[in-house]
Length: 223
Image (tube, rainbow, N blue to C red; front, side):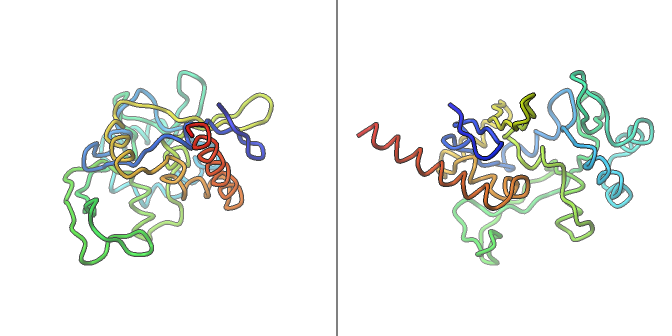
């Protein structure tokens, strides 16, 4: 089942299925697994090039050699523009660091961050994005490609001019599904920030209304 908001088609499971990344379990496997890089636009390729010198020190030497040889982007087997990868696997912009994550049962500040009294877990050697790291450290004003930020939602452009959003299920994200179910956190709520970044506040508000109406319909049907 699909709903349409403006010129965007949204798969219903984005509203009904739960998801919440669990870096303590997966350690960022989505940036490593697979046989192609992350989908990017020409504008995003320009951003990757613009801030490359800032994030370069966080990249592996092997990844730097790949970029030197073919650039920040490549064309995959489907003819789409994607980020370059290393050894047919890792995105070239992956970097590894120890992350301090708030435990699930800890308190949080109003901005979503962990409070100073929150219990935390150190996740060693976690795979992260060098661009996002630089963004969060205030070194650049652009975070990362929207396809990365929106995952597990995949976006595609249809021949009729509409945009389609679907939920991409992947075994490496099984712990994210488990955590999402435990928190009862729907995909569209987990991805509130990137969805607003991509489609705007008004569009996201309309999506929330659609999700509420769907939940009410399902409750009436069960009743």
